[in-house]
Image (cartoon, rainbow, N blue to C red; front, top):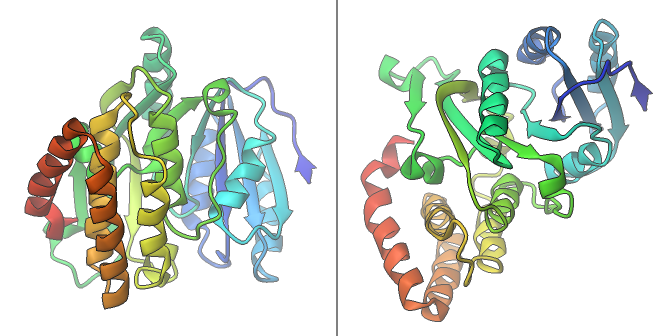
Length: 298
C-alpha cells in the first residue's frame, strides 16, 4: 500500500479500478480535477491482469493526497469495502475510473449537505455514450433530480455520504448491482436527503468491457433482485424510493436475453409483493405503472 500526504482533506473518494490498462484517460482527468481540492483519493486496484497495476502506479506518482491499495478482491463491492476501511475524512463518495466527475459541483453539493445539516445528498448527472452509431439525442442525456430520476438510475457516483452514517454498512460481493444494494441499505437508515439541481457527474457508457455490458445477461442481474428482496420490507424511511428501485431492477432483469432469469425475477417479485403491506403494494403498483413509459429510453 502506497500512502501519500493527505494535507487534511475534507472528503474521501473511493475509486475501484479493474482491467483498465490503456483505458485510463478519464481517470487521469479526474485526478487532475481533484488535485485543486482537499480530497483524499483512495484508488483500489482489484488485480486481474499484470499491466493495469504498473500503469496506475506510474500515473499516481504525480499526484498528492492519493492512497493506492492493490489486492485480489473479485468484485467492485469488495474493493470498495477495502477503500472504506482507510477513509480518514467525515465525508465519502464513490467514483468509477472511466467517468468524468464535475469536482467543483461535487464540492458544492457537499457544502449544501453541511448547510442543511443532512447526512446524505445527491446531484444530477449526464449520461454519455461512447458508441458512435447512436443518434445525437442519445449521446448526452441529463437525468432529473427527483424521485423518478433517482429510481431510474440511483448511480452511487452521484451521492455523498457522511462517513459515520455508513460505517456499519458493507457492499455485497455481487459482481453487478452491489452499488444499488448498498444504496438501499443507506436509504433505510436515512431521515433527510439533500438534493442538488446541478450536474455533478458525467456517467460514460458504451464500453464493451464495462461490467454492465459483460454481465447484463448473466445470473448477476437476477441476484440483484434476490438481494434487494431480502431488505425492502417494512422500512418506513424512504419507502417509495426503495420500492421504486426494487421495481426498476425487476424491469432491468426483464430486459435480459435469458428467459430463466426473467422468470426467476418475476417469481421473487411476486413472492415479495404477496408479503407487502397494503401501502407497500400501492407504492409498488405506482412504480410498476410509471417506470415502463421511459423504460426503453435508459
